[in-house]
Image (tube, rainbow, N blue to C red; front, top):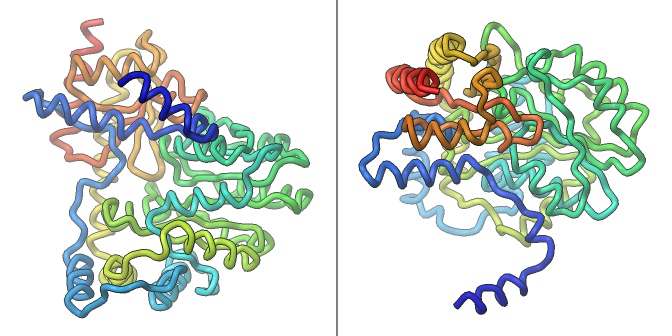
Length: 398
């Protein structure tokens, strides 16, 4: 048996050895296994809203099924959905975009993966935020390109420094990945930093930018989301990644959209045809209902996250050896745990095993995440308070 497994593994393409994973799902599996054994586990690890998809969105998908929407749809998405995306961008970002440059995909990760496939190859370099969403680095390596980290620092609210980013660009740089509001830090990049970066990029016309704006509707303290679509000079080399998962509590529906430079729409559509044919039609009708229907549920969810944010940040800052900057977006807190004497992975593993609290080690998001852990506050205030109590007891026992 072992010999067969070894032979099967040896038959895999070498690039599979470069493909990483997303640790949040590993921790979720371990947390679920412990819960199945009867352990009381509070999960502050997984990054998904704990709210149901609003009923009018669910009903739109059910209606589509009953109306016979069972066949293929256009590879780049239903025209009505692409038009709804363009209208939503006009409403919430104040920018007019061509719906013909919107490509509908089964989840935000697909836009990300397609960008890596288009620009990543041996000899190329792709810049990405670190700590950042782990699939960035994983897919860069898988593409054959060299990942070049953009360090994000606690002292600057986990924003990048535009001059530092520009200093990392070489003639091998193909793509820069940006994410604001950010996973795992909750950081929001100030407009001034974007202004400086976009101005500097005029010196590097060979470099494209992918802006991951999946948390665009989740900002706090009066922060307004700054979309890179605001910068007209960048639009012919800009990819915007967004979708429905976070804003509308639709993580399991797998529905995302990308906005692409005009020259890339055809090759991306070809990738769609080769990889997934099209997104299933009922989900696309649900997406239309989400964008064109009432927004009160989405707004209420963000208001609830804001209340939870105050509870978790204040609670973390009361714990011994812990300090936590106040996130301005998304639904994550990223406390500094260096004062506890534990490294990030040890903290993650011991909190789950000994305190029954699932969190994610900062190193799951890159080397610059050492000394931090990610708490998701997409959970009830009662569970957040209970988890903080358990963490406090654990730290007090060290």
